[in-house]
Image (cartoon, rainbow, N blue to C red; front, top):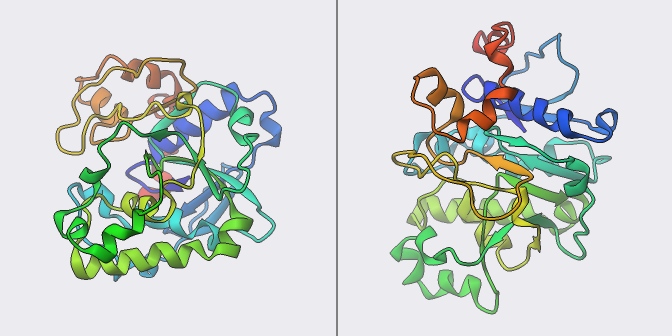
Length: 276
């Protein structure tokens, strides 16, 4: 996960939820990526510094400001930031809670794939890229021969050995450079992942990413759960549960996030990164 002042409250809730439902919490190691060197003395975890300059010249504006922040792109550099001894990780966004044993997600068989995530093949894939992308034959040909489906990058199981061997960071950066020149998409760090991995993802049960609970990227309206069982609730979109709760305008499902909100009981954690 990433850590910053804006999403720290969500990160802490996510960590708490993982530990609450884990069968063996003592086996879980948390790796956090931050743009500050300051380490909270009261917490035990591994913290890695992310140099924002890695992406400053590659980011182009998107439809929501939060998607333009350098830390949103840190997931592209996990294989470089984490030690070579780390072979597999689960990447989580900071706006989710887990309500099942995370070991079930950890133990999925990736087979020959680099990445595993829930896929949503009913989504209109063309909407994630601009007309300039689809009218350029060389760009559009990127998906030729691939059964490409949308997947949300907020929940991913990643084989870092295969990632490093395949030099996937470079492949993602290449599309970021093309975007900077030609504006072929609108949504932050997601489209490069679709361009590189869509159609080559190990499918994970949808229960592991009940996403979109934060509404869309413009209005953040309330949404219901998707049909089916739930192992993870994800407030992707503009609306974040802690902001809606504080504004006294919560959505019904925000009540499921509230029990994991440790900030309601202590203000000490909030000062860790806000002073940096």
